[in-house]
Image 1 (cartoon, rainbow, N blue to C red):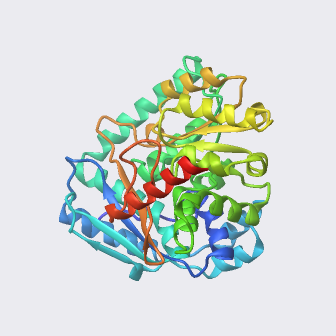
Image 2 (cartoon, rainbow, N blue to C red):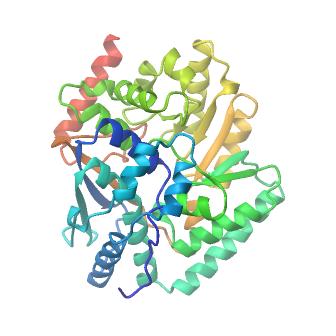
Length: 401
């Protein structure tokens, strides 16, 4: 490796990887998935030197194992079960599950294949490695980190002066962070600062949550709904949310309950998010489409079910900055609990354009899977015909139920 080791702990991933991982372990241990990397920036190019460094960094990540101290930390989380801790004690990443090449427009192709238990865990560390390698090797990193610190100080000043009010917010930036150093700086600064009426409640990065005694934040991602709902050929994919919500409640009951709404459009989600699930889940997460329109739709849905929306949390996590979050909070203040998960704007705001990189599930049990969110451009499926089929299934359900 030309750089220092980027991922230093298996806790260095997003919290929802453990909440989904436990449910996968107990309910879907035989499922197999393929994940595909994509860089959405049209003008970015990875060099051969970067790709070699990425390979070496992923090999180093695959050498890591959970320590007993880390396992004890996870075991102290009330919804994590001892059987899953015992599994993690034996778990190890496999470099053999990775296929890394130059066969892509951006110069970097990554696919992972294997059990869902394994491949799900690779997504966040892989993206963090790719991001840090790129910015350390493509730019003058010292200039970037100084720019990052200046902007971070400015943001904290805005909250301290109450120029912006965010209610409760968490840091969600590991997958696209400038570096491990930058994310650590941001989380520590936000945890220690006077933020006026805003409240910094935690981070999705479990390693940093442990380090700074913060709440590790995260429940489910799109992969959960896509794989549970579409990975079984007997399922009608228009009911993906119903299958996913049912399995989640079976695992967690009333614990750990923030439902993601836009895997196959929020309108279709609401057909399944009826009284039982709306009552059991503590809130819902927005990740695409107009946030005000979405929030109004959710409040109306709760009211129509006879549920007081002020008892439920609307968690917003789609490409947020402080100005946008402030606007959303002021709109919904007093009408529901409002919270924010803010990623790139906190963890990779510098003088250069951040990467827009993703790794998405593209196959489950040998079958195509897809996301149809509330806005175009967020899906990633290798088979356009399957996306059309999924859309037809959704349309038929919406028209006939």
